[in-house]
Amino acid sequence: MSKVPATQRRLAAIATVLPPGATPEGSRGVILGEALRLFAEHGYGGASIRDIAKLAGIKGASVYSHYPSKAHVLAELIRIGHEEHFRRMRAGLLAASPEPRLQLIAVVRAHVLAHADYPMLAVVSNAELHALPPEFAAPILELRRQSELLLLEVIQRGETLGAFKVADTQLALLAIGAMGLRVAHWYTPELDKTPEQIADTYGDFACRIVGATN
Amino acid sequence: MSKVPATQRRLAAIATVLPPGATPEGSRGVILGEALRLFAEHGYGGASIRDIAKLAGIKGASVYSHYPSKAHVLAELIRIGHEEHFRRMRAGLLAASPEPRLQLIAVVRAHVLAHADYPMLAVVSNAELHALPPEFAAPILELRRQSELLLLEVIQRGETLGAFKVADTQLALLAIGAMGLRVAHWYTPELDKTPEQIADTYGDFACRIVGATN
DNA sequence: ATCCTAGGCTAACGATCGTTCGTATGTCAA
DNA sequence: TTGACATACGAACGATCGTTAGCCTAGGAT
Image (cartoon, rainbow over all chains, first blue to last red; front, side, top):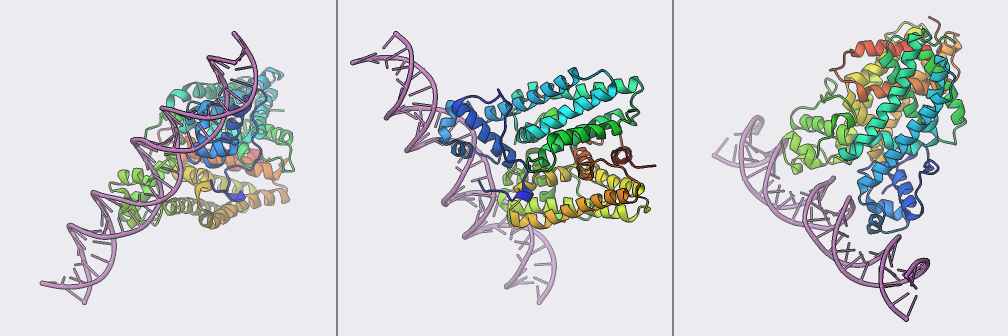
């Protein structure tokens, strides 16, 4: 497992952080955390069970006392990532005032903060989904669809109410989603911008994209 | 090499297209094209030399008559991708009127069209850079820096001239870049939107993000 | 005191990896 | 006609892959 130069890495973040409550106890949790780091840095195919085990302080065979297969480890990570993302999006919308503009800001903020708070989880969730055995992917794809639908409905409602003026709804959705997705790749706490600042600015960008009347 | 369900794929496009003039003749070109498809679908680590060779209609060992190593194949693909991207960005800027707004539109259009015209190349160039041996990566990282700088300078010039009004230059740069990057993942010719339409709309989005006065 | 269990270990399985070697074949220049 | 070269091949190299089997040990419950 060779180290990759900083400028060449898939993401800038160093810390492997999992949502509170999502980390299992003991070795199971350690394995999950180290797998997260290696999958994020080198991809699912580029990280071996023995690599993960070594970082976790055990031998490769011992991993199978905690997970039935390498794919199960990836599946758990991606599930945690998507659940946390959807949970935040829904909570953000729920807490927002009904004005379309404030709803959009709330959802975009949640989207961005999820990617800044858990960059490694976001990178793995987005970039390694294709490596999941299809039977593991189905519930995750449904969750992803829900998150996307949530943002879409906010935009459509804003249009219907005449609060937004956007050339192409679908393209606006994709553009706003993309902005947030990439945050996971470049965000690091060493930056002179807090996640809050980024979320605020991106919320403003989203409003501009959909032509929100302030 | 198992097939991945459509909803789970890394990108929507099917055709492996390389820029005209960039495809070598004979087997060398066929190998490059099939490697592009497999690296895009499964990642560098997820595609083997024998997989590539089988699609190219030859045996694994024969690949080494054309490329000294698997890494050289990836390096050539990523080099082509970055060169095409930078070439288009620079050409777009060069052909644009000096008004900041038109410059921004031109550069964003080039950025988006590069990702829609060569989705597989873009996905590989962006998602597999970390798999390149560092000695191969250096010139490519420089090219990437140049493309980024080009967009940055357009935005900064617009601000200096008072044509743009953006909260955070760096974040605007990252957001606009991200929008275009993701196009490679979802664009497919089967869509009911042409690359031109997408490029136009995204150019408009970019102008809104930087608060361009029309 | 004894058993059970959880969680480590070493060793090994068959498969596949990137790559090398020696060889065969077909084409074209001398 | 000969020789050189480019391109293909089968076979095999050592390394590493995910995974399994069997064993050992510490700790808690009976």
